[in-house]
Length: 181
Image (cartoon, rainbow, N blue to C red; front, side, top):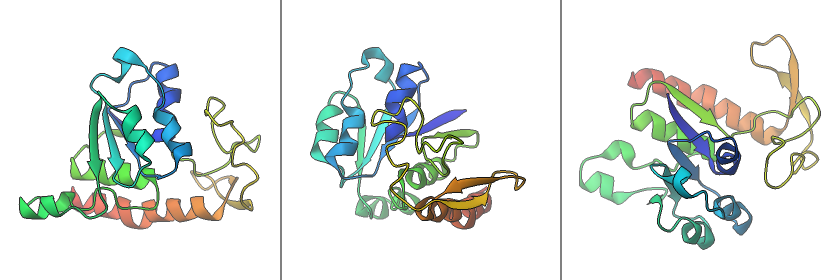
């Protein structure tokens, strides 16, 4: 399987010696850039870091010497060299959407996505215990909404933005992935 990981999950995976193949960043804040302010040495070898061109400059600075690809929302080069499918690799509402597009366009079939929160934990935490900005960093930031859990048998708490992300996966990315084969 190929592991695609959101920026926020990268230091957690490194702590547990789980090496992603791709790490993506879409956010532009200095706060988010700090996910890359680590020196994991040999662990980073062969990981491809893909950053949207709008990320904070510190993210790029922290990734010097690593395998780094910088994209923009609409890339003209892929059109010029007839790789039109790659022109929107950084499109989406979240870094997970960016990862999904990348996995689809690179034609990966057996993929693992790590790092996109879609529901609160049973204890109300918004993030994993190892999250570098605290497990409850966003726990009270948004109004909690009940929605069906995976499998439709139970309910979980989420918020409107996560529902937007989930719906986008279900209504856009998954059907388009199926069409692409």
